[in-house]
Amino acid sequence: MNEIITIALKAFPVIALITTGVVLEKTAFISADVVKGMKKLIMNLALPCLLFLILLDSDLQADYLWGSVAVFIACLLAFSMGFLFKKMWKSPNAFFPSVYSSFVTGIIGYPLFISTFGAEHLYRLAILDIGNLLFIFIVLATFLDKVGCNQTGRKRMSLKDQVKHIVKSPFLITMFLGILVSMLGGQTFFHTNPVPSAFVAAAGMLAEITLPLVLLVIGYELHFDLKQLLVPLPAVLLRISMMLLFAYLLNTFVIDRLLGLDRLFQMAVYTMFICPPSFIIPVFIEGDCPDKSFILNFLSLNVILSIVTFIILMTVLL
Image 1 (spheres, rainbow, N blue to C red):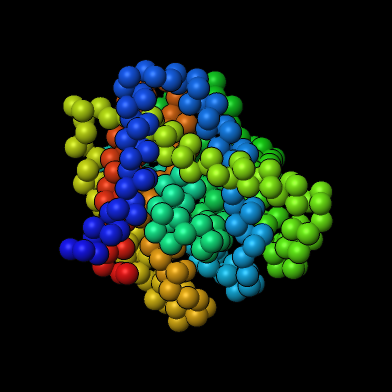
Image 2: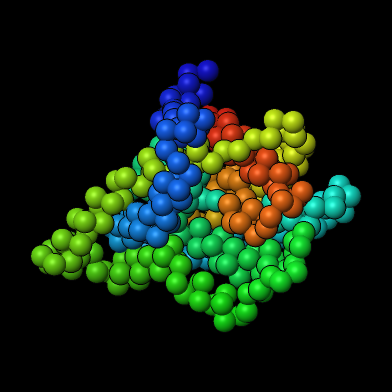
């Protein structure tokens, strides 16, 4: 009992800030346009700065990248299972398979992992997240672009557009840059020379505001259709169960036996795999598509159950 209280207290700041975000939305204290601006700041500046600084000061090894390859393969397998579940469920929702793939690691996983293990260990989760991000840009975005309620007049993404999205992604740019500098031993240069160290200091100030802003935005954008709230519950529970099984197998046969990585890498895998699917899914659902309500309820319900699952799981494993 003491263990679950300890983990819950560590996760309390996360829950408190998400709840604050909910209150901000319900009271109309800030507008949706403000939150949209906050999201742009987080995704394009603050979170990339946090990732770069953490990776910069980490002792990285080439073997770690095989973990991200394993995550990419796991995402593919989970996505394939989504098509099977759609058939079993006899769901007419064209987007149904997408909710069984990918993870919104940066928005949900990073705050949970940091609250429990500390920011200095986040590089383990960030490296694994490379495989997830590549899956989102290469596979998931392609699928979402090809399905929908109404494709009339819709401009499809070309291969050139997809490559541009990958190359221009602040997440991937800062990840690869941080990994490259760290593995080349460039930490000393960035910390001892006046100009680079000034940039590092500025990035550090931005990084400090990242997690509070992220959690407030999550709370603000939790949308429930109360009449349909329980409709996606079986599908959400199925996803969480499947992902926990995938995480166990990945940890046992790849992270531990094949790569011989430490236990915190295993905790990073579990943290990632309990996260909800990528929040880009509803972005591709245009207009008043009836599929959108299910997807939004699925994501919102998954956010809450992910936090609960994390608390229980860490209590058992730690």
